[in-house]
Length: 358
Image 1 (cartoon, one colour):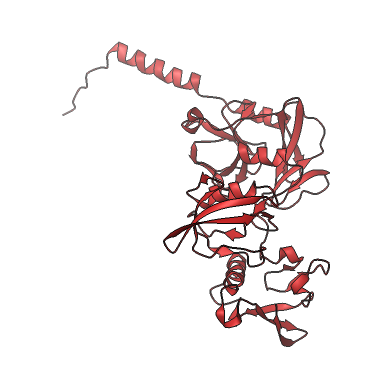
Image 2 (image 1 turned 90 degrees about the vertical axis):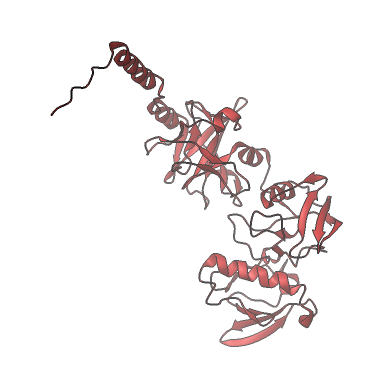
């Protein structure tokens, strides 16, 4: 037996129609922002350089893991993959804004680019390191822009779900050339616990497992904060670092040096000596002028062992793992009593295995 449902009141139907119409009326049409993007960007390689308006000046910036080709580079920061390019003035440009509370809570933000439909979503995390990018709930295209108004943006897409926030882009724009201050410490996680030390950093006072509490009076709670403060320290200045070691709090005074590798760049701690390695630990280049204690090494030498420990093992099945193990072994060498803090390399040269003490 069929049941007859009671008709909905006319006012209910009208209310539903109004709400539906309003939701469509206030839904932002990001297709206009795609047109704006094309007017505020320039094709470079397979991507786009974005025009940023700073005062009355247009800056054309590009994110790329390798330097762009067939274009004049005015400034490069290969540590984070940002490039300032010499390009013709575009019809439009973007105003880059910091993230505020309203934007952080906006569920209808969009990643805009030229070759993809707008990607709608919301911010899932803030940027907490030079390559620990801010997160978006949807895919971000490389050099796509994040915003909710066509001419204002909050970040630059790097692919996957990441984007670069304003303060990191501002740092790049304000520097004359890429510079990162260094205290000779590296971190494996977000914890403010030292994972590796650079054994070649002059008079390095740190030890693995030191907990960093503050730098020049600024308290820190994670490695991203430490890297930001450390990278902005002036070279040859003195940093006052409060640490906890084996349960005891102490203050270290450290002369700031500069960083030679890391972030998007390969890092082995050997860069300061002009030495570069490939994935198989074979030396690709040397610089006799700065080789110093490593002057015995030659191009095509393959580094097999450090203080009797192999670099390439079954567990180092990726390039990243191999270079992390290399840094770990070099870091540990400074505290190896068997070798009196020295470094013994076993290298393969022209088919012969040779020991070299550094």
